Image (cartoon, rainbow, N blue to C red):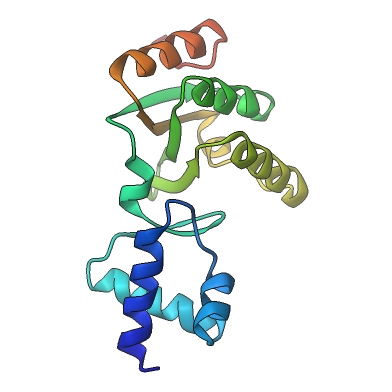
Length: 173
C-alpha cells in the first residue's frame, strides 16, 4: 500500500468512529509501525485535516463537538476535586472537549481531553494516579477552563450551577 492510500484509510477510519483510535490500533490494521502512523498523522494535519490527539488516541475534531451547544467554563480547584468536576459535567450529558491554562511564558496551553463517559473519567483518574503527573492547572494555582459540548444551553447552565454550588466554578474575587 502506498503512503497516500494509507493516509486516506486513516482519514476514513477516523471519520467512521466517534471514539479515539490509538496509533497502535491503526498501525496493526494498516500493517505498518506505530511511528509510521504518527508521521502520517503529522502530514495529514499539515494538509489541514483536523485530527486531535487525546489520551486514548486520535479523533477528528468534529467528534468532540457532537452536541448542539458549546461553551467554555472557568474552574479553580485542586487535584482532590478533579473527579467531582468531571462527574458533574457528565451528569448533564456534557462532553469535556479540552482543558486550557494561561501560562506566563507560553501563553494559552490547550490539551484535548474528549471525556464523554464515566469510563473516560475512570481512565483519566487512573492515568493521573498511576503516572504521578501534575494537572496542567497546577501551573496556575488550579485555575483552568474547559470547552464543554452539551445538548442545550440549559444543560450548560445546569453544569455551571452545580459547579458553583461545589465551589469549583471560578467566580471573580
